[in-house]
Length: 88
Image (cartoon, rainbow, N blue to C red; front, side, top):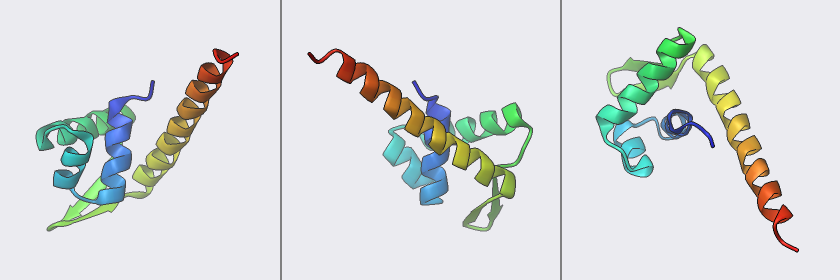
């Protein structure tokens, strides 16, 4: 299963809004912040820069998002293959 923090990251990168991300992920805005901060601490990077209300993804953040999307795709393939193996 893909880590919820990575799903939050992907959504925030797409939406560029903590409020919209919280709504889409069905979590609170502080939880979105906690997810991003945890990833930043884990990888020792800054993922997003804020300039007023504008949110931009850093180069390091883009690398993380790209690979998080790959992990999500791999996870979907695993689930699909495992599910199809139970159908006779």
